[in-house]
Length: 194
Ligand code: NI
Image 1 (cartoon, protein in one colour):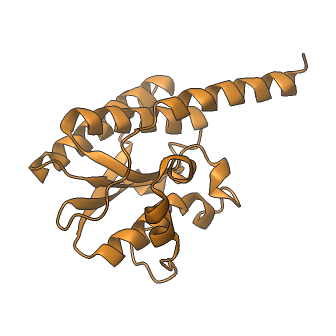
Image 2 (cartoon, helix red, strand yellow):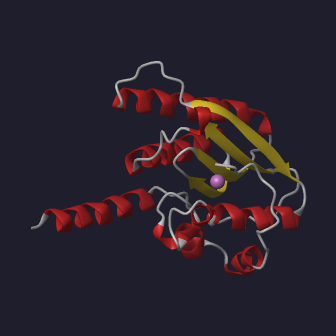
């Protein structure tokens, strides 16, 4: 088997594998004051997550930690130097700083271990917004599902394994899909200058 074919087989198996660990909670309709959009940035926007294997580790950690703390993911996108996700808070949303602290510290330790750079600062900061209006929520779901296209990483988000687009297309509620994709995203203002 040629090297390129082997690589393709590996890629397909691997993507099958990460796809299986995606959350299977169907997205809920809008709940006021319970939906949060979070954006996180690496230090000086350095592309610490450029390798797929790093994005993969980041996503698995996000799924695991969100699940343990009762946050239900609705959309996500992991790029080379930042991430976005939308999640429904548990009854008490005060665990958000804990979720982000765990996510940042577990991924930083692992990235530094892989790069033999112990103690290097990976993350700069994160910004969270509680979504108050249904239309704002729907437009932001659209925005995050499609984010790899905005950043020029793919032409069609269905081919990007580190965002929620394919998951949403295959498992999302049919009515919610219509509502989400009819929202224009060109005027959505979120921190995304990366
Ligand atoms: Ni972005």
